[in-house]
Each structure stands twice: as structure tokens, then as C-alpha cells.
Length: 237
Image 1 (spheres, rainbow, N blue to C red):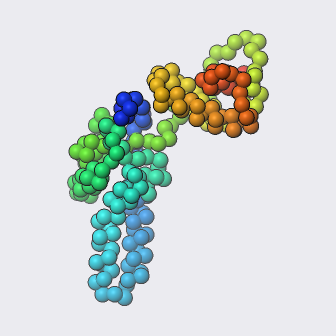
Image 2 (tube, rainbow, N blue to C red):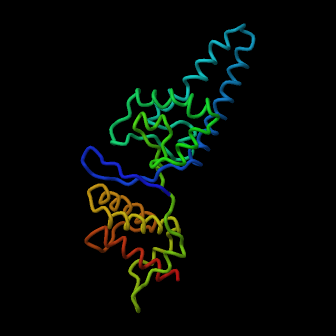
Image 3 (spheres, helix red, strand yellow):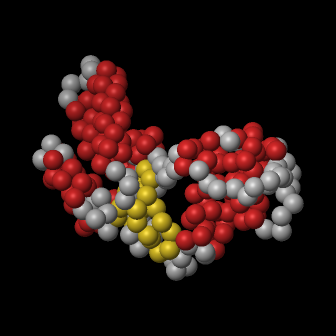
């Protein structure tokens, strides 16, 4: 899985997992399916109006995808379903011109080459960019990164002998919850900055809610998450 570090306007680097070729291809298929259904409905509604349905459906076919991405902050229907999104490499706000550049080069990347050119660039470029992305300085990222660990990986963590768990409520957590905790801890260890500290706090609140507790006994949220991880391993072995 490829990732990219994007520096925010506050000079903080955040790592994002790049959308894969499969992610983007499936998003395109979903967009195409929705568009076909929409156009079919338009033809059905205006079937009795000579040539009028062409005047209505042609602009929809050409510009609807562009309009949806602009209005939806970098996500078409397919991208929303797949959990991916267009962002600028320099983390600045996407402009209409950025979307337009990407949209213009769809004719070459996707339609003109039956998707072969887009597949070639996305599969071989450093940041999984098609030509339109390169010219617009954009990338497509995953909003929900795939889990980097499996439960068996987690349970191989070494624990202290005779350790007494503090939070027996950890048994209420799902595998996904615990893997999220591990990933948040790993990310904070690698990138000790304000953004990842905020992620630690947000993760703490979600884990406490899932465990059914109102507060924890540690001075810092970071220590609480470490104990949650250790308690889970001990109680579920």
C-alpha cells in the first residue's frame, strides 16, 4: 500500500494512504452506473419531446461528474462509496480550475484510451496519479486507511508476566477498535505533532464510549490507550 506525506498550511506533515488502481476503477464503475441510470430517466421523461432530451442529457453526460466533484469537495458518488477523495499535493483548497484540468484530461486518460492510459499512469507513477492528476497537482487518497495489522499480529505482542488488567471493559471492543488503537499509537510514535496528538484524544473518546466508561484513571490519553491495548491482549489470549 502506497502512502504520501502532505504538509498542511500549519507545516504539519500528515500521512495518507493513496487510493489504489482498484479503488479508483470501482469508483469509476459506480459513477458510470449512476450516470447511466440518471440519463435513462431523463430519456424516459423527455421521450415525447423531439430533440429536447438530447439538449438536456448531453450537458448532463458531459458535466455532471465535474459538477458533483466540485460541489462535494473532491468526491463523486463512486469516490464517496469507496471512501476516497481528491486532494492537492500542497494541502491547499481545491479550486474549480483543478477539477476542470482533471476533467479535461479524462478524455485522454480514460475515454480516449479506454482507460488504458489512466491504468498505466496510476499503476506506475510514484503517487498513483493519472495524467490529469499530475497536471492539476492532485492525488486521490483513502479517507479510511486499510488496517495495517491483523488480530494475530496484535496478539503476538509480549506482555508482562502477572500483569493485572485495569479495564475489563476492553472485552466490549471489536477487533477493528483495537487495531485502530494500535495504528493510532504507531502513528503518534512516528509523528509526534499536534495533528496526531488530536487523533489520540479523539480515539480515546471513541474507545471510552465503546467500553462504556465516562473517564479513565491515567494522566494522559496516550497512556490510557497503551493500557487498553495491553489489557485487551491479556484478557483475550
